[in-house]
Length: 318
Image 1: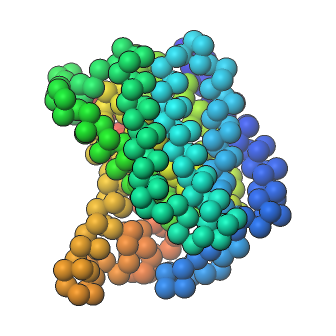
Image 2: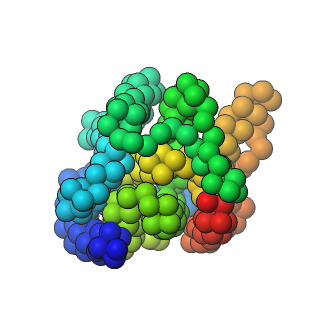
């Protein structure tokens, strides 16, 4: 059994750690550097020039690791499809921003269209080529399942794209998205083992790859994951949840992602409705806490602890 989660975690960690040592200087030399908004948190201006697109480090580590386990664990393939698919979208977005100097990257319509296409590929793969149904486990439901019939299909698109953008919003501080998602990957590994889900090699590989990446991404970060990494991690979380029939558990284990998205939606809606007034000092909400005087490391620690607590609550909820 250990070969299903211990070895993938160790392999991915080693690959990620070694790749980071090689790729971070390479990205720096290519001048693939992060830009910071002048109107943003002022302490972040010193980060301008830090290499981005570092998500390539852990994506490569995950892919290399899963190649060794795909034959024995075929259910990891749909998760990889969604993870890599959204990683490609993020890469295109980063490429346009830092190489072509198009400040907005992909236009919103382009990004949404690509996200819908990748999600559709995953949905077809899930329904046509696996035995996993779209019925969902109900948290604290004693094993009961919720079958929404045809409504499960639009819900899948909403859940996947919402989760991906939630993780994307979470990626705003050194090590924040990496650490939160590392904890979530640990929870999904435990859930897969408990439920016999058969996807623990990919969940463990993501955990190991993120540990290796954090060697370079913790404060002060030597590299940022960029949309390449954050969109891919969102795809991983959503894909894993659906392969385990646990999309409702994203609301628990992925509470931070939800709060980050809601903070942006609330801020924008209130701003428009009141002609310029704000509820938060800045959104996403991690910046609000920064402007309240919290250090980056404190925000990351608190958000990670909250995630760990919610994951612990989610285990008996199975």
